[in-house]
Image 1 (cartoon, rainbow, N blue to C red):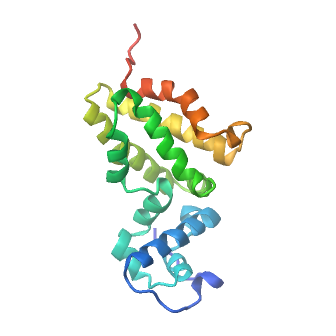
Image 2 (cartoon, helix red, strand yellow):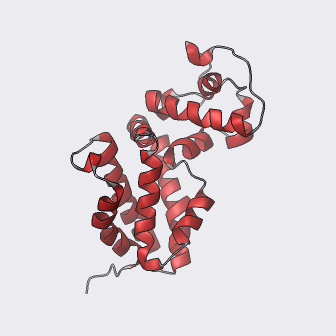
Image 3 (tube, rainbow, N blue to C red):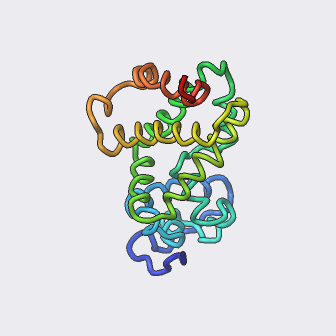
Length: 207
């Protein structure tokens, strides 16, 4: 898909350009989250995001490769995959689901659920965003995690875990179903972790 170059309004205004350091990367992520929340994946453009951040569009390619990379880093789960895998694997296997839920909830809650809302909006506007989410949840995050656990039926486990996490996010951040919307993390973790843990390490075949 070609990125549109006809953005208008404050996003496209030329301002003093930032350099290429870590501040530029942070500014691009902030601008990208806002743009994806407002416009979805298809509606947001590299040029518009760069203009909003006050940087040259070439900085998107420098830091993220393309809009796909920017979307994945800014919205899908805005934590580097290697970092979150290290967090998930740092502790007893039998409490893995608890660490996973805390990681997802704290990341999404830090933006008031805006990142997850942007993700869901993008899913509703095009297949590209749905494919990116599938790739992130399975290929990038869950399959490597499950390989390290040496469990069977990894593809099914990854799909089941994805359904649990996305379903939880949908009810909490998009539908805002009460009392789930306002429930503290540890109560959610206590309620949901046993089911998620079964998907990760439990027996899936009928007895």
